[in-house]
Length: 126
Image (tube, rainbow, N blue to C red; front, side, top):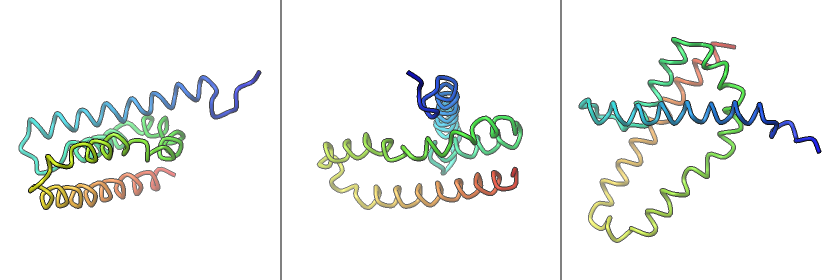
């Protein structure tokens, strides 16, 4: 039985490599934000580092560009652990809701800005 094209071993391997690259830059961003006194969350720093890597190594962007839409189509799955964690631990957040909401808004805006930068870079590469 033949696998559908989206599940062929080579494509799946390349998608996993793309996911691994994203994870590496996520953890690199976390490390940088903990070591340096930056006012940015680790994932944002990771996105900026990934953008820099795309600029320095266009082949990395080319490798990942084909698989990003498939990864984005499953993006909602990444929110499940955080959502469940908040639902289970909501009592621990009593008194901290203004800070939590502010952090969510600021990090969302910064994530969108980083996404815009990546999109502009990707658009220029076409």
